[in-house]
Each structure stands twice: as C-alpha cells, then as structure tokens.
Length: 199
Image (cartoon, rainbow, N blue to C red):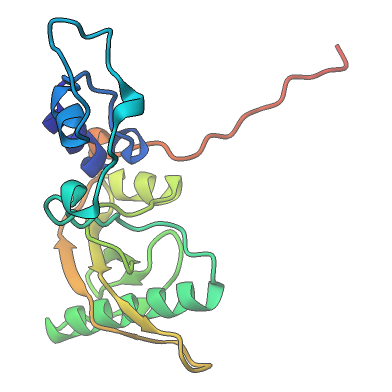
C-alpha cells in the first residue's frame, strides 16, 4: 500500500482512523538526519554518528486538520438534551413553515406531520458524516407503511459557560422519504447472549 493510500484510510476513519504500515525507502529520512548512508551496503548505517534533527529540518507542510467525525455519544446529559432540543426546534420550524402541523412524539420517531409524515431528528456538534440510529429507528424507517424523513442538524455550537446550556447554529441535511440502505449501516454494538454454565 502506498503512503497516500495509508493516509487516505487514516483520514477516512476506516479501521478507527489508524493508518496502515507502509514500506518506504529509508534513504530520505537518513539524509534528512545527516546520517551517511551507502545504498550499496544498507546493513551498515552508523546511527551513532547522527547530528540529530532540528525543528526546521522536520517541519514540513502544516498538518492537515483531522477530518471531523460524525455524531458520537455525548456523555453530558444536559448538553445532549440541549443539542437534541435545538435540532427538534429547527426541524419543527422547517415543517411548520411549509404548512405542516407538527406534533412532538419521541419514539419511535421524533416528530409527526399532519399527513402522517414521520420525522427522525438528529442533532450533533460533529460533521454531517454519520449519525447513530437505534434498531427501532431503522426498522420504523424501512416499514413500507410509514413515510419517514431524516432531519440532521450538524455542527451545532453549545455555550456551556452558564448553567443554561445554549445551543446555536447548525447545518441542516434533510432526507425526504428516507429509508436507510444496508450498505450505509455499520453495527456499533452487539448483544451477546451468555452461554448457560449450569449444563
């Protein structure tokens, strides 16, 4: 695998963002370190003769910003609730502006429009790359008797400097007549049934 391929895997989040081991010639690194190196005799590298590295020598291009991840679990329940309610407010405003009567429900979907359009709302402070879904949310969206939209508000900012967490902003991704495709789902948890030890 090439170095560029390894870097692409790391940035994509595949394999938990870990790059792959790459094989590359050491000659450039040894030259940079000022270590004499004879390519005809690669076994004889005098590492004890290295003058070391200076910051100028190793400072390359600015490190690219790490690709932001999608929705993850937020352990602070107050912050999680503020994000969720902010996303639901934006979704409600959107549908009401289109003439829908909106009712907040909760489970298995968050909002219900007047013509029985169900809306699954997701809010996140992360990028719009992925959201977490429960098995019931997936099954409900795949049920042919339901008309389901997915309304995602990403990049929400939350001011936690006061007792009242204040969410603001966000970027909307709106998927109408949404049905999650199998190839877009990735299992994150499994239920493991323990074997009976008494038999």
